[in-house]
Each structure stands twice: as C-alpha cells, then as structure tokens.
Amino acid sequence: VNICKGTEFTAEVTVKADPPNGESCQDTDEYTFTVPLPPPVDCNVEVNIDCVTEDGTPCDKIPPPTSPSDDSCGVTLIYTVNVENTGTVEMDVTQADFVFNGDLDSVLGDVKPNPLQPGESATIEYTKVVDICQGTEFTAEVTVKADPPNGDSCQDTDEYTFTVSPLPP
Image (cartoon, rainbow, N blue to C red; front, side):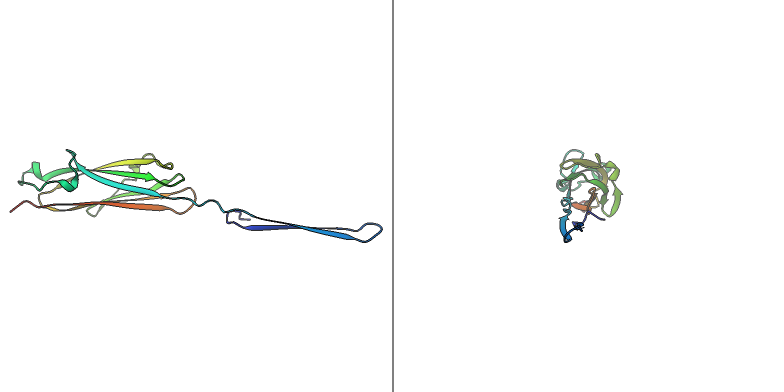
C-alpha cells in the first residue's frame, strides 16, 4: 500500500448474528480515510555573481589599457559567487558550474557548507587573470542545481558580462 500519494482507504466490517431463538441480525459499518499529501517542497536556490579587480575596481569599470606593457595588460579578476537556499527545506547542492568565456569549471567542491539549510548561503571566490590589451567582452556565468530531500530539483543561473576597449592604435 502506497500511503504517500493522497490515497483514499475504505474499511468495511459486517457482523451477522444468529441467536438460538429468533431472527438473525446484521450490522455493517464503514470507515473511510484519506492519507494527506505531504506538504509541497519549496525548492528554491538563488545564485548571484559579482566581479572586482585586485584593487577593488568593479570589473565593468576597468579602464582601457594605455600601453601594451605586461603590467597594464594582465588584470586579475576576482569573482564572488553567493549561493543561497531561499527555500524551506535543506538543499543538497549537486551542481555548481562556473563558465568563463566558454570554459567550464566545476566549483561544486567549493560550495561549503553543503547541504545548505533554509536561509543558509555559501560564498565561492573564483580568480581569473585576463589580458585586456586586445579588448574584448568577458562573460562569467554560474549555474547551480540543488536537490531537496524529496521533490524535484531546482536551479538558478546568474551572469556577469563586461567589455574592455582595446588599446588605441
């Protein structure tokens, strides 16, 4: 018997009596009950990404390079990723992928704590050194998937894109 699906059950009992003198008698009683469905699982995970350089400059405010020297071309980007369980049950984060300009890295091992309790969050730092002298668009995308103890998984994706102008001719 599967009692997890809101199933209705009916039990019926009939009693018949035959006394030694007299007419037989009978009575029937029925009891019906429904197993309530479990409450819905509120699976909700949110991911947010931000980016600054080593000196704290927001990545979307990086000035264009002024000379082709190694000092001004190589810039260290520090991405901060926040993963939060905004649902009502514990979530086991099963996927955390960081994609930078098409290159995928799993950062699942950096999600700590894991699983996440309701309202709890994990912060991941991801560092990337880039050459800005060619001028290009840089895109970082993070996708996180989480599984509640019972129910369907949920996921969220966030992206951070910025462009740096190339060296002037």
